[in-house]
Amino acid sequence: MSQDFKHDQHKSHKQEHHDSQDHNHHNQQGGHDDHSHHEDHDHHAHHEQMVQDFKKRFYISLFITIPILILSPMIQNFIGVDLRFNYDQYILFGLSTFIFFYGGWPFLTGGIDELKEKNPGMMTLIGLAIVVAYVYSSLTVYGLEGRNFFWELATLIDIMLLGHWIEMRSIMGASNALEELVKLMPNTAHKLDENNETEEIPVSELAVNDRVLVKPGEKVPVDGRIIDGNTSIDESMLTGESVPIEKQKEDEVIGGSVNKEGSITIEVQKVGNDSYLTQVINLVKEAQASKSKAQDFTDRAAKWLFYIAISAGLVTLAVWLALGYSFDVALERMVTVMVITCPHALGLASPLVVAVSTALSAKQGLLIRNRVNFENARQIDTVVF
Image 1 (cartoon, rainbow, N blue to C red):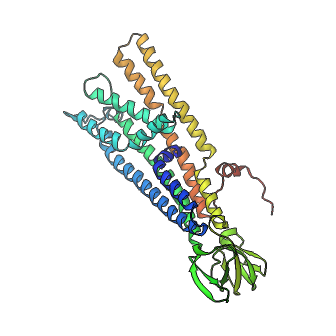
Image 2: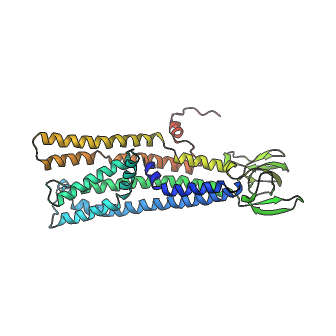
Image 3: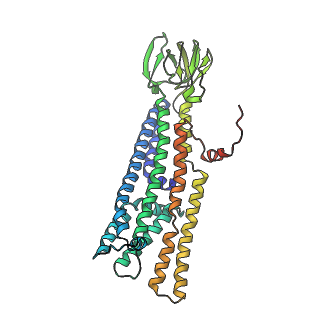
């Protein structure tokens, strides 16, 4: 749902990310790995910052919604109390203006970006509802006949902020699983020179065909082929194979796996972006960026609801005017229709599904490669070993 929005929010960040990747590409392949790790960290920090931003906006907006609800005449009528006093509507207007600009800002900017791309979605739908509710309600405070919708504006912004915060936090959880994968790689390796003397060097400086000594208990620094020695290797963190695998001369080993018993000498076969672990990390990144069918459905629903909201609003206005009612009454009906067309539930449904599934999977060590296939997995009725 909010992938479009994140895409927009990240646009400048992605550009930097892209530029630095291009720059890296011209560097040696070994050095590339260090750069991409650094970029991952930057991207991670940026994402963390956005999660915190949504969290802060949500809590502050929620706090200010309480007096808005108490001061709203419609809510007072509903619960059968009368707490009206002089100038209470101006206080209500002030609080709602704050929520509209502070809490609604991500949706207003996201909606503008969607409209620029001529692809209205969830952001545009939320933007339409809050703009219509705010503008109309403000006019009622300053003399227009009608009831205000400030409470509807505030609750809609709160729920949408909550939905986006939950979704972004879950994606953050999956990013944390990636960080754990990155940590599997050792930083240094024992490189052998022509005289079989060992020298400790950063893994990023290793090149294809270099010889590396791996001692018992150490992590294998790169993907390679054993040219001397026998051992057993624990690959459980990478392949899920729980029992250590016996390895001898000519067998291949994966960077990040743990050497259990004997010392082995390996010849480096893959470095940087070609390595097994880097490819796994890239697959998980792609999966996080890919949209599930639920999200696609939400996006399509939001797009149609946006068109329906505008059409239904204008039809409502025309019909009430044709029936001979005053413009004030017809306008109020039009605003009501346009505001309630933006469903609170749609903003929470998709993010919650994505959040719970991604978080649970990451905790169980499941790295999702393709969201659509992951959703289809519920239809599996037989597992064959």
